[in-house]
Image (cartoon, rainbow, N blue to C red; front, side, top):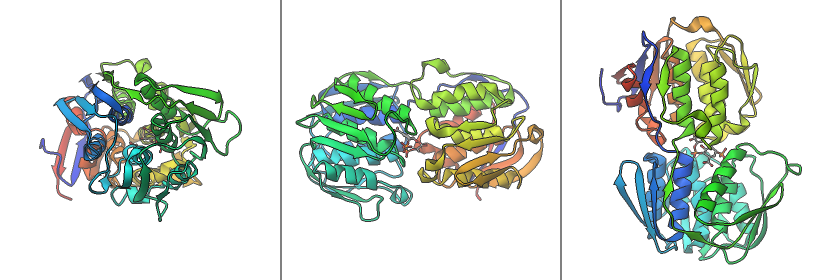
Length: 428
Ligand SMILES: O=C(O)C1=C[C@@H](OP(=O)(O)O)[C@@H](O)[C@H](O)C1
Ligand SMILES: C=C(OP(=O)(O)O)C(=O)O
């Protein structure tokens, strides 16, 4: 067994024992990238503890440094952000890899720069839509262009945010709303951000991520009102530097919860499921019901947990249909297809797509079988991490491009190894 996860392929050897031990998930990606940004928009020193250090948060931190903010890393889980409260024009385009949060949040925050800012990402990010956010910036009087509808985006910042009222369609991503909310607090007048389309009070997908945004903003002294169910009114208070403790990542926790029920073990995450404020913590109640997952799971309010739940569903007593997951097609990869692809590589009848739904044809008898399958991760950390769970029960499961977990959970393979899971590294 190697302890270097840089190979092309990781084969998971099903453990012959329940997984027991203590693994605390890393800090929340969503909260870390929100806190880094609002701390950068606050004058003074903010200490962020419990933070995630991964590709996505590194891209955010480096981009903020390129805009004149000092970001120090006193230890493995802390950032110290020292800022004038202003973002300076970066010397080069901001490169944000495939970090959706960093890309969307900084596209709006770039309006606060006096000058042009190019927000760009890797080949995957360049396929992830950003046009609704660009249009919303335009409606607020902030000129911006994204000729392909995806990054790169050029934002012609005026050194302040727009004012008034803007409608935004969050159907493709709630991150557009979060991005507008966070930047709006640094304007000179209140901004009303209104959800387009839906009926009064209608839920949007990933609504819990908006709540996370509001909570982080308020922790840094922002003031937001809710004049009606579709509208957030952000006061032009700016942010106050503060010390902020970030909770562990709920999406990362789903792999550990699933590993626990799949192997009949007991993994101490150091934090009870009820303590999480992130949307994916809702998956805990479903995972706890395994092997009796319900026949239909609406993934819209726990989107990043769907890969975990879909792989778990393969071992359930009865089939599971996943609904409300259309926007999984515009995540790091098309996750609906990637999940169907991985499951059918294990056994051709194990899953199928129906419109934007995913149907997993469960079979508890899969456990203990030898079904050699090389799973294409599609460079997507969640596809890699969730299919590793199948390898806890089925002999012959290999995960391609295992290092892609570094996007949000660089210590994932070490965490499994620390629970006694044997992993074999090889070149494809
Ligand atoms: O705001 C956030 O932190 C996130 C929102 C969700 O994305 P969308 O809003 O694009 O669906 C989620 O999938 C992503 O991992 C993190
Ligand atoms: C969708 C995800 O990330 P992001 O949109 O932040 O790139 C994710 O982490 O599953």
